[in-house]
Length: 116
Image 1 (cartoon, rainbow, N blue to C red):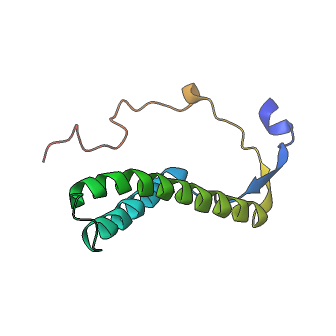
Image 2 (tube, helix red, strand yellow; image 1 turned 180 degrees about the vertical axis):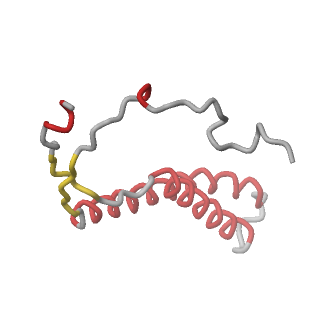
């Protein structure tokens, strides 16, 4: 066969673990909202403002600040993962033809077509 005669292609790749940004952004926003709730309801404030309106104002500010801090933490962890990246050599596996395998007419091993 011609595919067995050709040498396998070797490539060097970089393997690293990168953080997902969305969980950091969500967690930062939630922490900001919790801090806003503590400031609005636990600390004494001006009696001319309702605690719920103070909470709404601080929720926007601290929520946005928390999202920004979460993004900064994710970026720092991403930079650390670049430093800890490992190099590896991989070898390409030749693809098999899908039509070359015999079809037994079954349901590929699933239990959906069988009755007990």
